[in-house]
Amino acid sequence: MVEHAPAKVNLALHVTGRRADGYHLLDTLVVFTGAGDRVSVCDADTDAFHVEGRFASGLQGESDNLVLRARDLLRELAGNGSPVFIMLEKNLPIASGIGGGSSDAAATLRALRKLWGLSTDDTQLKQAALSLGADVPMCLAATPLVARGIGDELEPATGLPPLAMVLVNPGVAVPTPAVFRALANRENPPLPALPARCGFHDFTAWLAPTRNDLQAPAMSVAPVISDVLAALDNGGAALARMSGSGATCFGLFGSFAQAERAAASIAAAEPSWYVQATATIEKAAADVAH
Ligand code: C5P
Image (cartoon, rainbow, N blue to C red; front, side, top):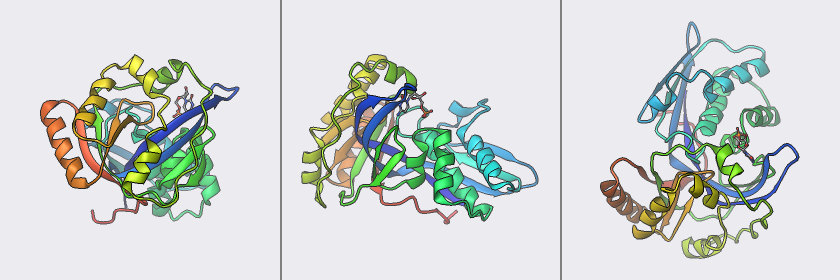
């Protein structure tokens, strides 16, 4: 059983307030991409976990990986669950604002629910997802959406055009709590209403005046983010912005061919950066090809 764990991209992220427990209230438009990690599960004699892929080394020696926490939580919830071998192909940079860990955990929940044939209902699964992290419920849905609350109140975002984009990460891990600590203004207005079904130009015109309120605080923690945004602007992006709490930024392009050209030139100029041309997906369909 193989599940795609897509990158999560916050096209806009407004911080609208703060809860008594310190968590921040958000209003964010989220999409998912063809670029992502891959979680494979199969029956085994004993539980085992293996990580491979470009960014596997970033997870070596980590005992509380979100994938394993997701496995243990679902097993507890189900009251059964035979031993499993889980393989994580870690293609996305770690702690980089595109939901890698959260998406891996969500893909693990989706895969094991199928492998174990569980009838766990969606509400239960979403609750379990939220206990793993604020972004895990949206990654479980893995479809274009607006998320509010601490990111757990989800509403489908319909009518968005398919988007070609380039994801760029400069290789600096930015811890989410540090970015929220550096945030000066926590009372920003919510997102304007989404446009009706529209094409690329109308959509980017709607998106342009929105923001990622975490971009400025993340830049104070990791100034290299401004170089990433400049590289995307110079590459011809219609709009370049940081995702989540960074440091990954995305650039939107009118076509996938343009995105690929920009990605090639940024990668040539900055060989140590993660640079990936990709496009949005409508749904994280299980990948049964492997
Ligand atoms: O829920 P998760 O473990 O992903 O959150 C990591 C940290 O990010 C939290 O401990 C909190 O400091 C911050 N955070 C926040 N508001 C959110 C989501 C995360 O302040 N909506």
